[in-house]
Amino acid sequence: MDKFRSDARVFKLTVWDPKNRSVGKPRFRSGAVYEFKRVHSFKFYHNTLQGCVQAVGAANPGLIEEFPDFAAAKRARLSELLSDGDMEEDQE
Image (cartoon, rainbow, N blue to C red; front, side, top):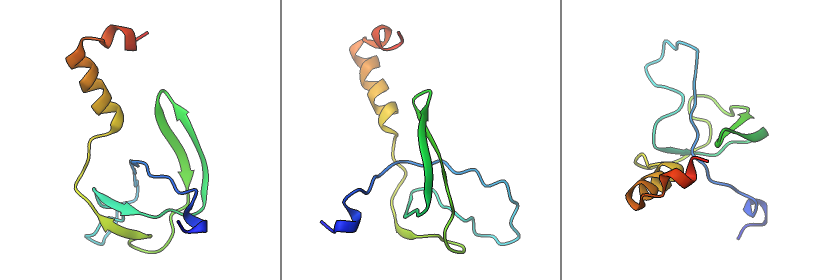
């Protein structure tokens, strides 16, 4: 493994871009894989990862590859719990 990528993490990111752009292409596309640099902080808030990153580049900062949309791991775990009937224990 590359020494500089040994501490890489993969996560799903929801981006809100409040700016209305005159260009037809959005800055971020659903299902795309991006590389972010200058990550300032990450923290969990009610089981949701929140943080601050600085966008790098112009229209497509660090676009690596596009994938179809995927279900979040938490959503997948909850569907398994519902099928097992263990939802009451998880809500405590």
